[in-house]
Image (cartoon, rainbow, N blue to C red; front, side, top):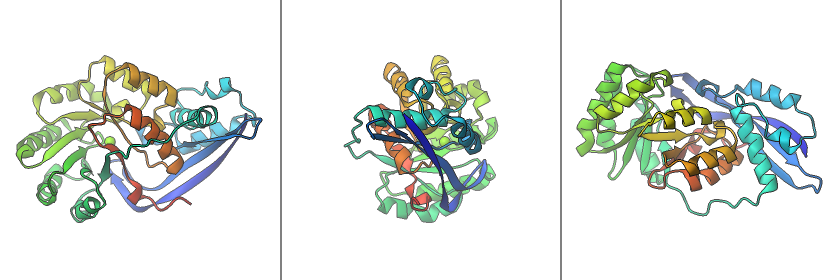
Length: 307
Ligand code: MG
């Protein structure tokens, strides 16, 4: 198969603020495979290095050293520390060799609110766009400050909204307890669907213990960025939710196989891919994400249109 790639970059309409800092440009690569008959399969490499994937530069270097002709064996033997490359080339290969059908059911999608006080004015906009599950990032400012905004936020949410909180591993044991206590307290007023990744990935047992102390469910995200981490947390009997970002989770066929053989409560989620990667992720999500929960792909309003 003939292999080629192109780099791309897209700006965020407004920078996304997380506890890792500000994110204002999404860089990635589009890979193309062409067989002898001229048939083409494309895939997207969208790294997220602070989550543990390779960096954009490493992905580009990897693609650059690949020969212009690739065998199936070469495509399927990308090392595990290039999970975004595995996903991009793996989906291009699947697009070339399989008749993938687009997901026909319109999925229930969770919309991402801006961080901090800006969330308050964004609620009605996202609600009008049809989002009924909303996600808000925390762990960026002091807990007291964020919790004051949180009280206003839940007061402004129309019924029957579901709210997800995402700390990106930015809380301490103490602030996680204070957040979970608050979430349990407001449960009669609004449904907090879950709190995502309260503590950093190296504090698995602390998160396990938090999940037993409070009613509000917990989800792992950073802890299960790659397939091997996901396997480990399943083995360690995490009984909460797993946020899966297929674009950095390695080969799609491996993820597919794993999710089909393990009954996990999975919520598939975006890494701000472009349309090509998004479609590959949505196909997997349609089959493997828990249909009772909204998928985390309500991020289109964050990025400038595809260039
Ligand atoms: Mg998250």
